[in-house]
Image: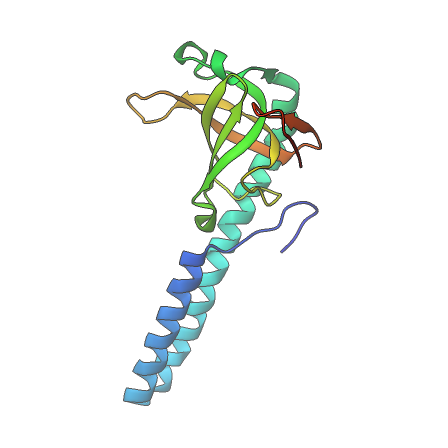
Length: 177
């Protein structure tokens, strides 16, 4: 199930659930020798993999369809200038990835920094490229609150991609991605 740039991925948790239920199914079958357990269990195991892949594919497809709209509408912003008054505005930022969280869940969060500051960037699907600490990236997304009721502004990422640029750090060293 691959369509151009969209490569659906199964999270490690979904694979762990599949493995655990496979073991439980095999134990139940060998203890009871009831073939009807396999009749219902094997299709259920298949669905335990197919459903997360389908959901990931649909999520990535939706985000890839939104990317051209955000490329048109988003305005370039320095991270320091992002404030609560911008909630709901599409933005474009460039910076260095300082940290990567939850990539194994297919719901990565990135801490992106430029010379003016840093901001949390949340993505609710897996990105099209493997993003690692130290990469120089361009982020397209929507400014939102960290929590439903409040919190500081963060970016709900629609697209994150590596940029072929050099970033000069404070120590006058150069990093190249």
